Image (cartoon, rainbow, N blue to C red; front, side, top):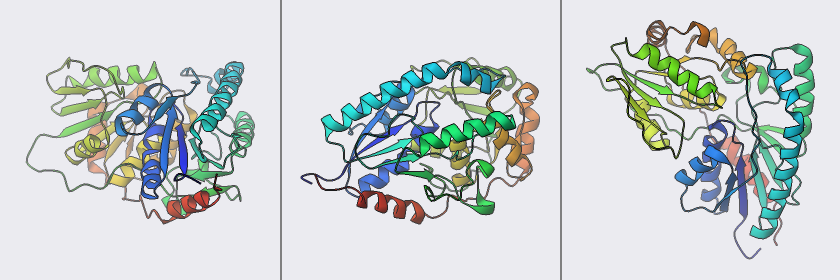
Length: 360
């Protein structure tokens, strides 16, 4: 090989979580002396370009899936022809990029068409089992999803086994094709919150439209009557700044890793969705939170139910959102234990992956 291992990192663009949890992967690759090439689409690609402005980054064909608030499985089935066409376009684009950029290996976060490019590849996914809200469709979706994951050389599961698991049954796997690499977070634990100041609430908006906007609007409707200071991270990297409609609310389009760490350090409670990457960040920081699953997304609804009885975070349905009561409940709870854990499993998995790369 005439150059260091050149690795393509390609996260899915369904919300920002796949891109943000790829950041520890990218950093580890850089520590190992690899040349990293980035590829994604939409806001996920914008986020990666902002976080790593010196790395080459390329657009991939997107998969534009629309979520409703009901009938999740039927909605996805209706869009299956669109998904299949998008997968074919992605496979063609990745193969072309691998050839043109002389890529030696591919690490994909849940992209369905980044396999089969002729180089060693890995897929990152916390869903070895898929939750659809119905047993039959769940079994069918799980079988189809695993079939895609098994196209890759190995599936890395960003979770721990046993009682420290953050994804519960979704990440449970005893399969030689899988490797648990522990929770992944771009954040590091912070000092304790400053005392003697008004409570600050950090709101993290995320997910696909129009549900992201509806969540932001629901927060603003209730924040006006509360005595807290709110910082709302809108989850819109690259967007222009927006003036706040309320005196106790500060709006920002997006927070990078350092800004988010500082916001968490100075906030008493977080209000967010139950997206899995957000849960990993909250656990890494030991943060207190009010979690509101995205309506119509069975995975987030399951994660809400799974964590409701653990006593770490307050859980509310969006239809019953009571911001004042939820914030008080979240503050009264202990919060999540800091279970980001050791990076040993990820480092071993990475070294094994890099060991499969043959000299050019």
